[in-house]
Length: 398
Image (cartoon, rainbow, N blue to C red; front, top):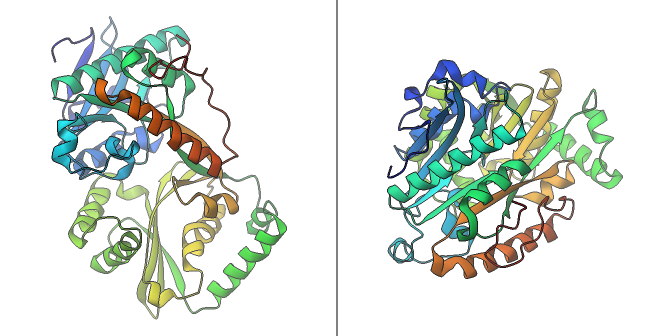
């Protein structure tokens, strides 16, 4: 790096981090901040991940952030900064405009790793975050990135710190997405149903009744050992329906990465007809939280048996009630189905520094994108930031 802030080190591999000290930063044990998950993301990114650590004057680890260098459009839309503003040109044109390569401080799961030790007060933690953000932005520049962003921040103080560091070159913080979560305060499935509107409650009962009477059966698998080409094709059928890329080989590689890194946390709700897999949902155990990560279906074999809703919602909820799960995380997107079944949206914000010639258009596109998302999700709380006084202001108090 051209300028390295005091105490910052850059690591290309998770296993180069001081793993014995990470507990000071990840005291809650959250999956998406864990070394195992960072290993998974590192393998999935094929060497494009950088981890930045911050140590204090006594040499203690007091901060961590992870940055992904994205060379082209071959990345999920959640981490494609060009797609955030509707830029659809070929990679070569987007590169000419400064959109590729770019740096994205976000990991799989729509999560931003921006951790500081909890021993300091708010001002000290803010200072540590700002050092990490400044270092990550500088590293991205040194890697040839004119565009760099921090995505899926859920902590308002962290958003303010990122925005303060990226400064006027970044537009105001924007609503990047909404996570959907269902938190239990009921003892059984009937208690869950009691939280729903009467018409929805009756519909869920029908969806559950028809599924259970369809001849379909569900097994809960621990780990990835039984996942194979058949289950990969189930996933690809869903991707094809939504025009998402993928191949059997890429899905099998993902199974391998999951198994090597977080295999003990994987739970698969495998749906079978006469012993043949025809649907699945894959979840990740995170303490008393369950992340529902992906689904796959043979649409011809599951027909009108409501397999989608049962595998994504009702079977995991029923299993979770028996295994101490308190919160179900359903990820981003497909909001109407998730909200109708009791989930609540949790806003996740982003701050991106764009090339100068794109800032005005990016600010406009992101404002329109946020307005559309808020119209779809009126349950979202207002942004905890003051409105920007100019299109290029930070939009947050300094």
